[in-house]
Every structure is written in structure tokens, then in C-alpha cells.
Length: 291
Image (cartoon, rainbow, N blue to C red; front, side, top):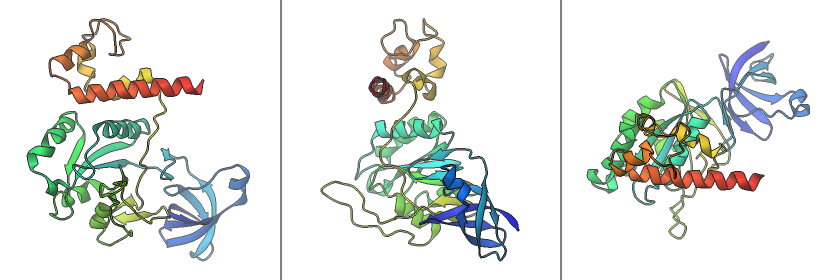
């Protein structure tokens, strides 16, 4: 019998597929190995099973998107998580993560965590910058139960994963919205200021009709786009680009640049623009190294 399901966990060549008849333990047919195709968590698949307990994956449906680290497919949104302190929020890394998710056609949700450790006026300026750009932004604290209900609403009916630097509280938030201690979390390393976790397997956990990837996301990112396309991911530039002298303006050194004028006049956040210059330089350097 052929069933349609979704891979929610993979361990050592076994894939656990959620179907209308429950979870079925599966192996992949040899044709996938021959074709160098590896099923990953998040895949929608066709399963051949006679007893609804075990079976074989016989077909993998087309993927909407796919991430390498963590290895997962068909993701709707990324909960880009940063703490306001310990570690401090890194705006450059935040902008980089936003762009990376958008490149992969994943909706970015910005989560500012540990807001119980500071006064509201310390995180609201950053909150408002990204909120005004049209991003979904949420301020959270596990200990004061701030923003947890809103986070649960955001996760409902979607396939989501948490990503961000180590030590910002991603695993704690996953545990909080799920209601169980899903991951073993060690102490924050004072020397490296990095969170310790022992998660080894990628798994989708069911939450309110949606799924959350039960593993911390990537902590280092490499953008793989042409530096000339970077400006297209800065929505705050759009309205001012009409004032640029050149249609091909990259907003770097060109004269009569509407974007640079907007920065000087306080209409575009200076840190956002500075991050744009840094990312542009990084992409340009990476391209030259490849060729």
C-alpha cells in the first residue's frame, strides 16, 4: 500500500514518516543511493508499507526549499533568534541571517530574546527599526513569560526552525513552546560565551498543527549571491533608489545616490547601511576567491 507522509526524523539510515496511520519506520529504496539522492527531514514522501509499522520510501516529492545546516526541507519560516545581552545582539549577523532566509524563500521572523535582563528602552529601538521595515518582530523571555503566547501563534500551522548565534536561548524557547525539555542544555561557556547542547538528531516536533525543527540552527552563514544583487534584499533602500542618478547604482561610491543621501538625512538607519557595505565587501571578496 502506498501512503503519503512527511519525514519527521532520521537516524542512521532509518526515516520516521508521519502518515495518516501514524509514524512509520522506513528505509529508502536503493534507487536513491544510486542516484545520490538522500531523503532529509521535512521531505514529503510516498511510502510503501503493508503493516503501517515499517516500510520503504519509494518517492520524494519536489522540495520547496532545502537547507544544508540543519538538513531540512520545505521550511516556511525561520525564527531568527538573538539575545539582547549575553551575548549582545550583533546587527551585522542579524541582517546577514535575514538575507540568507529570504534568498532561500523562507520568511524571516526576528526574535529578540532575554528582554527580561534589560530595560525596555534598550531593545525597543532595534525592535522598531525592523518592525517599520515590515518584518515580524517579537520580544521574548522564558523566565518572565514575555512573548511566548505570541510565539506559539506565529508557529501555528507552519514549519519553522530556530536559528541564531549560540547561547541566545534557542533551545530554551523550543522547550518553552513545546512544553517539554526536548534538549539537554549545558551551562553557557564563560570562556567562549557559547551555548552548549547535545542535540545529535534532526527532528520535526508537532506544535499546534505545525512543525518546529528540534535542533539549533546554523551559527555561521555563507551568502552565495552576487554582490550586485545584495541591494535587492534591503527593502529600506527601495523608496530612495528612484532618486539615484544611475539605474545601476549600487549605493557604494556613485555620485548623486538617493540611498546615501537618505542615510545622511537619517531616513535610513546608519547601522543597516554600514552592514550593507560590509556584506557587499564580503560577497565581492568571496566571488574573487572562487575565480
